[in-house]
Image 1 (cartoon, rainbow, N blue to C red):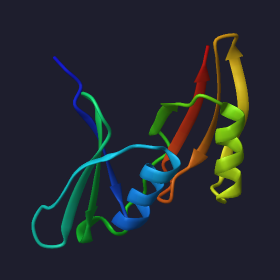
Image 2 (image 1 turned 45 degrees about the vertical axis):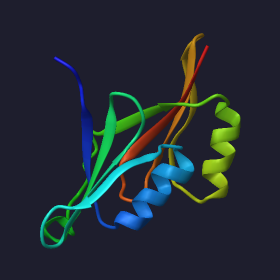
Image 3 (image 1 turned 45 degrees about the horizontal axis):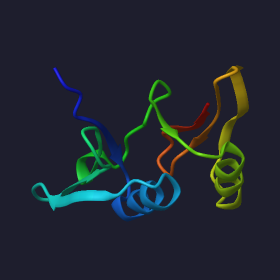
Image 4 (image 1 turned 90 degrees about the vertical axis):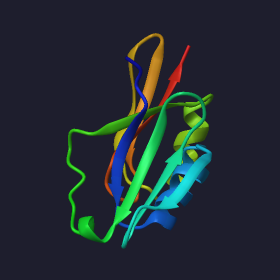
Length: 120
């Protein structure tokens, strides 16, 4: 078995694509209409992707507290400063649970938790 993608539902495709491309650094690999009032985009390189769905049916959704996505960064300090400068809500200040990893958590434009982590 092979993990293919994680799907999130978003309120605004353009705002979400801008966030995941400019802040997270994912590349758009595919984007298409999937029927009336629905658009799907895939981001990322390699085997595992992030699937973003924007649909008129899901405009009032709640992203929930149990979902978070982690992304590796080269410099946690630089990533933290960039996220703060862009005004995204930081929900967990930098933490180092062990000597090999430190991370912080912030919210994407739809309220999903995003972790930026530096690993040594």
